[in-house]
Length: 77
Image (cartoon, rainbow, N blue to C red):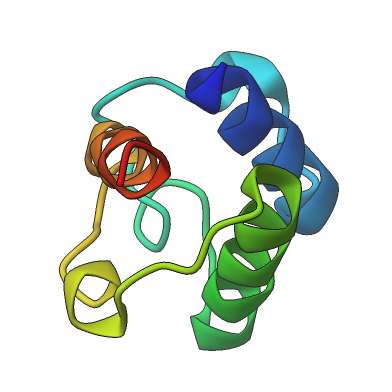
């Protein structure tokens, strides 16, 4: 479920094709996100999942796989 939500948000916010999104894909380098994009992505994910991410952990997220792990950890709290 987390992967689908993340993919949907990335496609909507960044305008990328879903086929470009893989576990090792980076938000900034591979998908061209900037800091405003990252903020919009996080906000949308929090709304979709009805959670609040720990800011200190969010700052370390670089790849899709890392984001999915954080989403699962946050959701299971």
